[in-house]
Image 1 (cartoon, rainbow, N blue to C red):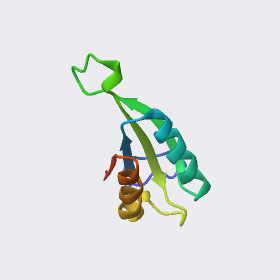
Image 2 (cartoon, one colour):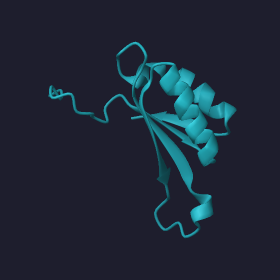
Image 3 (tube, rainbow, N blue to C red):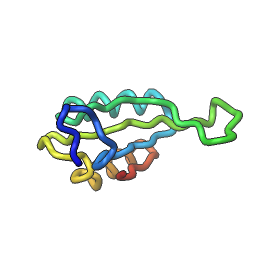
Image 4 (cartoon, rainbow, N blue to C red):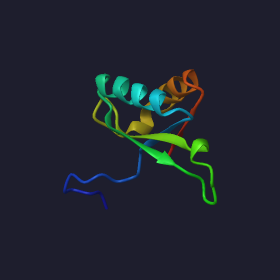
Amino acid sequence: MADTQGGATSQGRVLVTLPDREDADELAEQLQDQGYEPCAVHRDMLAGEDDAEDVDWVIVVEVGPHGGPAVFDEPHLSRLAEDYGGFATAE
């Protein structure tokens, strides 16, 4: 059943993963300017990862500029991620 309270669900979102925080912050800002939301950036340490320098940075994108799930824009988001040495995955 869909969430009718306006809360976020993970269905249809895209995770854009980049190796550098500055790049992640920059791309998140660009995506927000294009109408994507929420574009939240967070660290993604792999289980058992000891070296904080080897973490990835993930931009969570749930809604595209068209108002629908960001998954519809996954090819576009993947190309942008590749420009920064990263990748995008749809959930």
